Image (cartoon, rainbow, N blue to C red; front, side):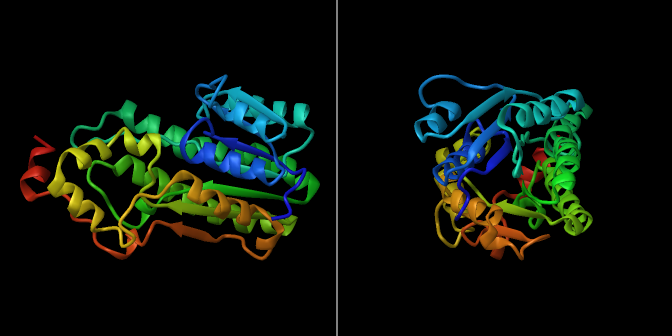
Length: 270
């Protein structure tokens, strides 16, 4: 993709989609800075795998919802790696709770990490990219913006917010030669997903069949499946793409989501 010797800053890259994207870019010759709430070391960690690929790596522990930590990550990346050509806002969390049971703390955690974090990083990175009059920003959104799902109100608000935020950023930064796009993954076999509804699907054969029937390709996506999509979008091969959203979901958004019964809906709010 012609990305050799570029530098990318990625949030939420210690596992799942973020890790897969970081490794895919490193394979293309990109030096990587990334942050996560907890940075792993040693065998299997993102930084170790990037080093094996012969690229520079900077791993920083940070809470993306904390303004001062975000500013610190951006400054440290520029100071130690020299530049930021690409920024990928990927950090995200999900918690399942019905509308009558969700707490303010839960709501704030999800919005703070998924949406506020994206805004804070974009603000700081955009200042730097505007000075250079070039750069690429990419957000991980979600197909949840198209299909409401039970117990995911806060998550849906956060990811829909990321999408419309990205669209606004795209038109504001276009005059400076900065491109801004989003990727909306569907059901990906990542830690967030595996820690939520997936165990229930696996343990309930009826639900599992119903669930998989909503995916025309009849499987969950793999994090590494996404790597080439991100690499393409941040490369010059996508130089005319800005304000674009790429849906990557095995056809999931083409079908209605019908997973639970009326009784289950009533019980979730009791």
